[in-house]
Image 1 (tube, rainbow, N blue to C red):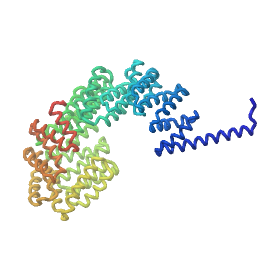
Image 2 (image 1 turned 90 degrees about the vertical axis):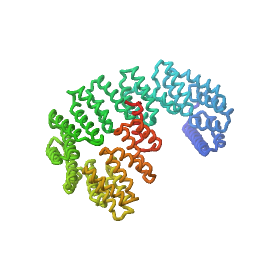
Image 3 (image 1 turned 90 degrees about the horizontal axis):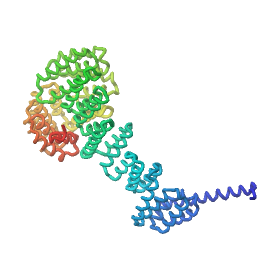
Image 4 (image 1 turned 30 degrees about the vertical axis):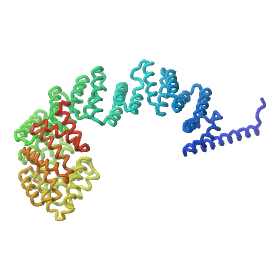
Amino acid sequence: MKPYNLYEFLIFILITTCGFAQNNDQIQLANEYYIQGDFTKAKDIYGDLANKTRNIPLIHNNYFNVLINTQDYKLAEKYISKLIRQFPDNIFYKIDKGILFTRMGNLELADKNFKGIIKTVERDQYKLRICAQYWSSNQFPEYALEAYQRGRKALNEPSLYSLEMANIYRVLNNRDQMVVEYLNYVNLNPKNINYVKNILQNLLSEEEDLKTLETILYEKVQKNPDQFVLNELLIWVNLQQKNFYGAFVQARSLDRRLKTEGNKVMDIGVMALQNKDYENAIKIFSYIVKEYPKSFNYVLSKRYLINAKEERIKNTFPVQTSDIQELIIEYNHLVEEVGLNKTTLQALRSKALLHAFYLDEKDKAILILNKIINTPKSGPRLIANAKLDLGDIYLLIGEPWESTLLYSQVEKANKEAPLGYEAKLRNAKLHYYKGDFALAQSHLDILKEATTREISNDAISLSLLIKENTVLDTSDVAMKEYAAVELLLFQNKKNDALKKLDGMLNHYKGHSLTDDIYWMQATIHQEIGNFQTALSILQKIVEDQQQDIRSDDAYFMMGTIYEEHLNLKEKAMEIYQDFLVKYPGSIYTSEARKRFRTLRGDLP
């Protein structure tokens, strides 16, 4: 063969380069027609380009789609058959032929094509995966699923492809099978439990979905008791439903088997307490105190146990003085048993507030709080909280200047921190009680923007109350009287507050504060045990269309009164069931559903 000289070689390179450049220009032009939807022009150019094998990878998807969209099935079949002959190992072209058959309406031939491909790749995990992904991306999820199922069977690995199959069941909206596959996946990959939790949390928002997941998990746990990840998920699904007792049962089992001395149970107890499920919190902390008296969790659980009892007592109306005195004794025993440490100093702080707000023993409370403030073991956070409490007590005894001094100390020492925001909020409330609304608003405007959600919500709520009831009443007289009543309530002077509220209803008929006055009256009557009076006032709020903003609060409170204080379970169930229909978007919807299910016997 004659060798090229330099001149001939350069000519060859130039011609080749020009050819590639011309091809690229044509491909770009065809792609532009394709994007614009001008399939006829695109088809002509792609057809010419398809004559050169090197162009196929660059144009295939678009050209194949053009042929199908223009229903030129004869040319499409000729084209794809040619590719299969040229590239017999390219599995995608074979799948494309099946896709073409479906577009032609020959479903039987397409099915035969797809199943033949599945049979050839069922033992090759790599090829099977890419085929399944190709079917999925072309909207043939059923064949992708069949491929995975056949692959499992062929290799005798029942949990193979779990994540992929879960995602397909998700697309097919088959939630039961989706859940089963996600559980298979997490059982093989326990480290990915949070990933699965996040997916399930996003997908299973309805009560029925969570109950289905719970049922599946119980069955799997019974069959596979040593697969701890399933217990973890069962705890999680119970917590999603706020079924703290169910979560406790599973956590207790895990603690025993893993010998973690109540660690998992402790977390459930804290969550129950935070969600105001005091009965189950008491059961959980009592269990830890009894079963793990020598563990690290003992002292903390005993502190939480008394705290849970305290919250139950404070929310059982009317509050009995004898119950408060029992709590004081329990706090004293805890300090005597353990001595002073951070946990028992926190207990002393709680004890001080009981003396001040429930036993009218403010001097004792001040002594205890000063002791906490002056104890180095307390630490900066506890000292700051004790100062805030001390400020509250000075407000109780009518010394607001001492209160604002303490609040301001905490605010200055904890700038841009939650404790500092809490101190600022208390200062704002103090100015509000005094009727200095402008100064209160200046604090609230800051708190609405730069703080924790809870404090922000409190700030927004108080700010709206002030704005809504001072815009039309420029004298602020009614608003000042209402704020003064709130101070009376803070000082636990309930009877004086009720008299003032009755006077306001008579004096300011039709005022924008009327719904807030009714709400406050109902709350006070509930706290002092006048439940029927509270119910009649709440009924006024529910029936008055102009007070719609308070109606869901009022209706839910009616349910809790019937359930917790009058022990009329059937009536409470009726209220909760009706509530779910009337107020589906309320913040109380989840709690109303849980209470209804508990009363019906669905939850322990």
